[in-house]
Length: 456
Image (cartoon, rainbow, N blue to C red; front, side, top):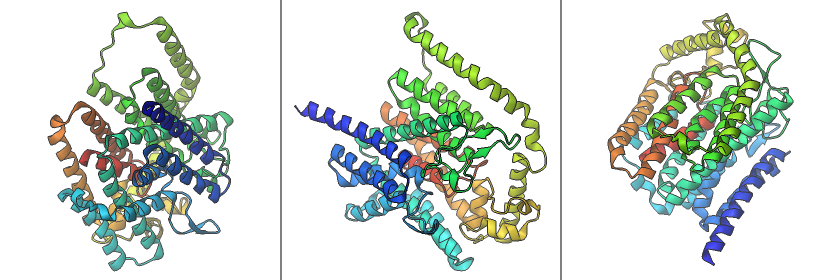
């Protein structure tokens, strides 16, 4: 009887999650959009019968939209970035006050706290604008999420549900991306961030006739980097057919973003996971009923996508010309270094890179692209919060990985696999963060989730 009840709860949660994603896709206004997260909390609570754990998983479900629509906005202008993700984290923080979370905070976490304090000091001594205060509040949500994640990921059931939710994100984003490419433009849905600035979507920098899908994100680079950062978790699935289909859809979506760096990161993930798992393939046991459809599907996918790959590669030379993608990144790096040289200790304030760089404009890039931000997270942190902040953050990451490598051999296989995948995802974040603006962004929340996993 209990097994049937448990099975029913799992079924309810599975179909409830599907309904939640359908709600996100079809939402046409903020109230319906917000109700989707309330619905997800409700079905998660039914499954777990624990309010705190349900709120934590709701914050995880809302993570991709942590930089999106805000509860506090007038005429689409955010007063404070209070998203469903932020609300979930704040509610859980209040509910968890009595849990004495201090025992979860160790020495290396103090470095992350000092990183956050650097943002406050920057606000007090460098720039007291409203935009900086908004940035600090958003950063505080990320830090709280990290602390709470360490607390709740100690539960094995929450770990499994965390994997499920992350993979559901991959399925949703990959499916939406492929459909967008199929119709040649965004759907114009409320959940699609790109329609706020580019109603017709994004196109190739080298060829403005080729559409680049963006999923729910503001740009194809943000989409592809988000998928590559989660990509390793697909390999934790046990059912080979399901794993193959989800992996293939994710790789197709990453390819369709036409982001060459994410293509390379995807290959790197595949190589590292293969090296970690060292799978042994017994060709004598392979069944034709499984091999033929797999080979056919792979062959069809390659046949359809290869012309785009060939054409994109043929245009690679244009990426190093004036005002191309690489040239723009190099000029933005120079602008960031110039700001760091002028404001080395306190920076210019969170969310203030563009305002100060436009006035500086040593390369002239901002005459053509006035609102663009440097595509390099370490440089962005140094420019906006100061060099000490970057030192604190990098030390936090270094000691987190050091502890993980030291303790890795003592872990049981399941825990080691879970942390290995999180550590790999964190590495991919850092590599992607040198090419895309991933701070502050949902990707940064995801990175802190991974740090919580390897530190828990």
